[in-house]
Amino acid sequence: MSGLPAAASGLHSSLLTWWADRGLPPWVFDAIWMVLMAAIVTVFVLLTVLFLVWVERKISGDIQSRVGPNRTGGRFGLLQTAADALKLLTKEDIIPECADRPIFVLAPFLVFVPVLVVFLIVPFGEHWIVKDLNLGVLFVVAVSALPVIGIFMAGWGSNNKWALLGAVRAVGQAISYEIPLILALVCVVVFAGSIRIGDIVSAQRDGHWFITRFPLQIAFLLYFVAAMAEVNRVPFDLPEAESELVAGYHVEYSGMRFALFFLAEFAHLFFVAAFCTTLFLGAWDGPWLPPALWFLIKTYAVILVIMWVRWTIPRLRIDQVMGFAWKCLVPIGLLAVLATGLVAAVWGVP
Image 1: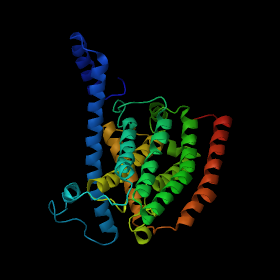
Image 2: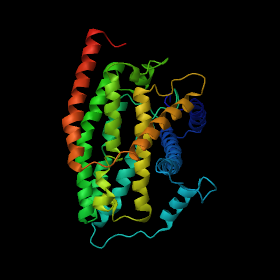
Image 3: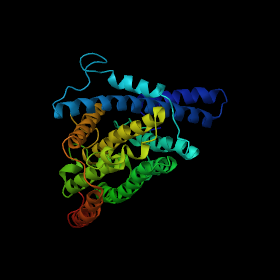
Image 4: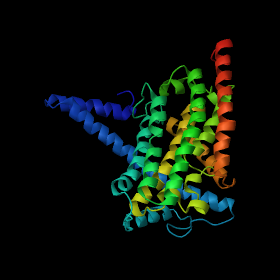
């Protein structure tokens, strides 16, 4: 149980011993323990999403010379997001008569659950990771690709031309930007010599962050741009472009089902920033402050930059989005992989 927090690991061992002394099967305890860990991760993700929505509203207000939330929850509107979440929970759940009901109902869960699962490998500290998988990077790539299936199901199941067009855009965009994102990950894996998250972090100890090593600066920029496209953030929000598609693939959704799409978007935003911190910014590495605090500071710094980009750069056209991926990012990614291989072969991995 080395992947669990230190305190949790000791508690797990003590409870497991107590459980075994009573002749109860260990696998039942392990199942209960994993459910408990999943519940803790879920609560953390939900609270993080509520905070991120409030932060984005405040940042967008400042950038556009507006006030932002300033009523519900006092002067700074701290409870505005909670009030909106409560409103969505109590709204009527409407399913169009012409919709494919099973697909329509299932789609939001297929979008939200994979985003929740990838948080199991987020390293908040040396011992603050639920499971440090040996195939951690591959696990992230595989699971992160699943939400696009739910998005396409939402567009198809809605039986709405705007929703279907948004879903088709989402699939094309995800496939296109997945390639430069994976090329960026290959550069990191070459330098770390492992696809295990713990090994990647260990290779950056004592300030030797990958973002300071050539040519991983290029890989960082590739990851940053591709990650924004994967999360459908402006200027890459063509799957739900309000000015063209009303709301895109979730135009027919309301109430809690719409909230799941909203939760998945902001949870995915936090994850790509946390993964960026893990790959390039040394994860929890830093002086004086507690490791988990360093990790959160770096993660929120990346999130603030992503939000800054969203509220300052206009939306691109769909042909520009696709062309930028295939004509610009993919060639740069291939050159970055080549440069990384040459550096590792000629000078060795620092």
